[in-house]
Amino acid sequence: RVQGRLHDVALVLASSYRKVNDQKIGQQQREMLFKWYRYLNAIHYMGYFNLVPTIGTSATDALQDLRVVGLLTEQECEQLQFSTAKLRDTLVSWLAQLWHEELDRGWVQELDSDVFMRKVCELRGVLAQLSDMQDLRISQMVRVMMVVVTNVLLGLALIGYPTKMYEQTTECFQFWPLVASYLYFICYRGMLHVMFILDKGPFYAKGDCVNVDALLISTERYLFLVFRSPFTQQKTISLELNQHISADDV
Image 1 (cartoon, rainbow, N blue to C red):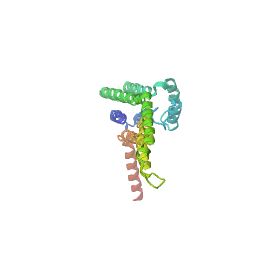
Image 2 (image 1 turned 90 degrees about the vertical axis):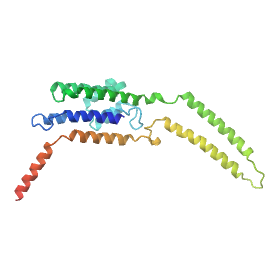
Image 3 (image 1 turned 180 degrees about the vertical axis):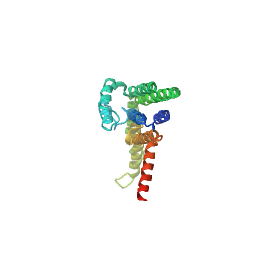
Image 4 (image 1 turned 120 degrees about the vertical axis):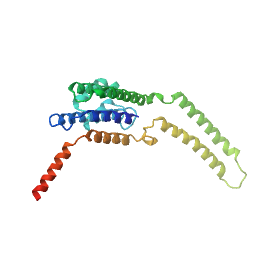
């Protein structure tokens, strides 16, 4: 859902800038689209902060990562250091502020304001839901009780199964009691192990539930293509250059 809301915001922005090919302000509007591109990708990355082990739980390290890849400037990182407890919300608020600045300059369409603000609010909502996943985990009391009860059951089974399935034989090795006890133990302990992995969240790599890298790359490619889709000046220049080269060859 986070990815979908980001795509919605990007679509509104790409369609609202109408003069990206203008000779006077086209370059400036393209630079502003790149700023939107940076902010949206940074928000997507920070959406998984405290959730994905590879991103970590250190706000300073996360901001440093965004600065290194060019999604945030040094000045922006210093500004965000004062709101490390609400990094996602602060970045989303920058979107609203930047929209109104662009609206005052007359670069975006006033008719798109209602749609844009609604999409930004929806984005903040789904980011909050994602952040609250940490608080929705199973309680430690329930987890400990499950582990204790399962271990007691397995202990009784390991004691009782060999005597219950004991067979009179001349061999020193009780094959079937051993196999039954082993399978009984593996089934219960295996399910506990799966529970421990899933308890770490859907973004834990070993759980193999959600590929965060694929989501980040997919959104980055979408933003890049959508924001560049109105650009025609480069195609025109390239076409004129090819025609000029062809005329020289003739």
